[in-house]
Length: 368
Figure 1 (cartoon, rainbow, N blue to C red):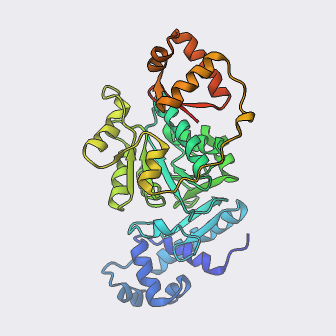
Figure 2 (spheres, rainbow, N blue to C red; figure 1 turned 180 degrees about the vertical axis):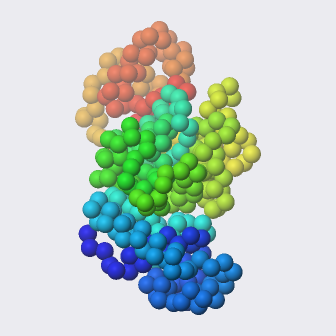
Figure 3 (cartoon, one colour; figure 1 turned 135 degrees about the vertical axis):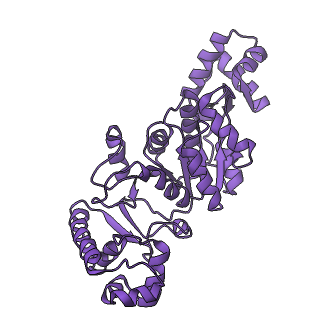
């Protein structure tokens, strides 16, 4: 990949200590291009942006260019695309955020300006409840919105579950990294990350020369929140990175959703707290998200009845009950059918295999 010479100046600019998006915008507005900034004398630059502290001097500029040259070599060798905030490929939603990075490093195929983008984050200690909800949610969303882009942080727990379920359902998914592309944390997610490169991608504000620091993991949450239309918190303890992401999303005036859970469960307390304080809308299904976001659901044409597998008497009975009631819990189906629970469960499993029904959190079943 051949990079323009201007890219070198853009990367060098981001390596000037004290540089941020607002300052970079101010400088470019008065000079035109990143290369023009470095043609100005230090004192002139100070006056241009009204800085009291000297951040442009021969030593810092030389150091920035040395780092930028090394980075150019790295990104060309590894097929990484640097995206400056003035580039049309820069995420437009993120550009609206005052603390967005001036430059991003991207490796992947997904459109960072996809029509619909949803961030899904949660605890590292995901429960079966949280993982099951992710699975069901993304199955449904993929049917209704095949162009949906899923964003998360590639961390343990809910994050990696969201990425994997997106891939399983043919949805594009982006992982926001808290380090440069020269490494991957956690390394156990390397296989999933490799799959995402051809069906989504990896995105970071950190160059390969930037040291990995624990503070980066908090900082990257603003990209997770800022790049998307809405952020969904699936599970969280009373304190954690997911709640920070929710607060950031709220500050950006983005929609925040949370999955409610058992009040005794440690990893539902954070979500319940967000809902209680009106910081997040209560979400229990893909339908809730579609309604909240005003996303129009285009139903796929149902299969012809002749294509459905033949049902035995018990399966037909359960389908009739679900047809009448819309949805049922297992105990309701047991009472309505007057059958043993074990027999109901066995037939529900068969109906699920046949693509006739779908299970939901809380032991609820619905007819497809």
